Length: 183
Image (cartoon, rainbow, N blue to C red; front, side):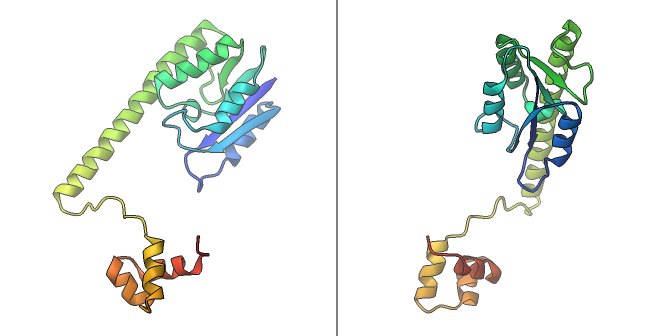
């Protein structure tokens, strides 16, 4: 049986393209999720797919980075599949088929390249943040809004504009908190 796994990193992204490609490739069942791929931790659809596959099945992804971003994670997943006598294929990296020794070699090389790309991306991001900090324009992530504080201030009779000024957020953020149900 061909079993597909699709993943995007954020809830704003669509799984449609991957799911369609996997179905066109003959996957009878597709596991999909919207989770970061930086680690296998917390990826329930991946865990379900790995539990689901049986001897003789093939786990298929559209691209290698949809399965894992590090060589360690990738090799761990492939070893788990191999132990179950399940093959692994990757649609966009055509030679990626663990049924052949060439495919296994290619898997190792591409895993190393994917990990290298992740490291380079992380380094560029760090350099950009350091440069922004040096120029005084980096403020980091915005702090989360304290909804309880906003409601408390409103209960004291303070208006939304003044609350926004006091806690350093936009007035729309105050209204958004006040319009949601109290936890």
